[in-house]
Image 1: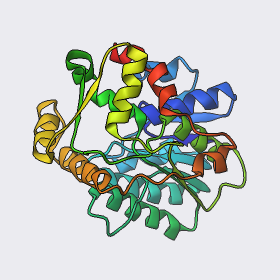
Image 2: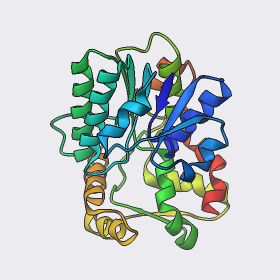
Image 3: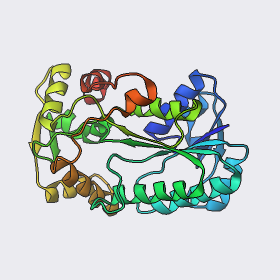
Image 4: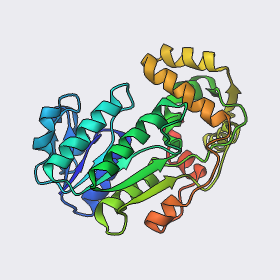
Amino acid sequence: MILVTGATGNNGLEILKRLAEQNVQARAMVRDRNRAKAIANLGIEMVEADFDRPETLPSALTGVDRAFLVTNSTERAEAQQLAFVEAAKQSGVKHIVKLSQFAADADSPVRFLRYHAAVEAAIQATQMAYTFVRPNLFMQGLLNFRSSIVEQNALYAAIGDAKVSVVDVRDIADVAVAALTEAGHEGKIYDLTGSQALTHTEMAEYLSAVLGRQITFVDISSEAMRDALLGVGFPIWQADGLIEDYAHYRRNEAAAIASGIADATGKAPRQFKDFARDYATAFS
């Protein structure tokens, strides 16, 4: 039995779709099954559990031998994931596939990269089999900028002309499913990137070509980006973490192109033009 956490998020839902297509026995962990209609439509078993209530985790893990681990990126993420790892160990889970992040490092100035590294280390210490899936910036992350793209034909970020090897969430799901359903991925760390390192100006040009109107990238200060994030409802901890993330990108520390997608799946990664075409209606 495979357990998928974060089941209502982009990554979890993409994984569940593939498992359902393959008729793989899987279970989705959700906080409220009444708010998970997309999963119910897939015919996937659901179990209610809450990362913030560790006592609910053992029932979700009953009979599970492989688990996909992801949580929302909040100030509680490290504690939530560590509690899940301990519950998985106690429940006899044999293999954890963790969604981590490109360049995860305990000494990173980026809080997201530090907490992912801490959880990776905890998983390794359990002696359970593991696969760490480390994607770079999601192409689908541009959906967070949808309002300015739709209303102003503009994309704003504090990144300058730095290149980032952005990756499609659908490729991340393909790698995770391979690790969950096939032998040979144990002990592997897959860095996941697209096949191109692009500036945000270049991303805007791809969107312009697909949408048939000019989308412009506007470089802004970190302070302005933080204010914008807070203005649309991001919590302070997450907004500050994203500013750290974008400073990391601005230093050209996320431009490398890795082979993890091909290594895990045998397929080339999707290109940004594929994302732009497939998600055009979201920006129209």
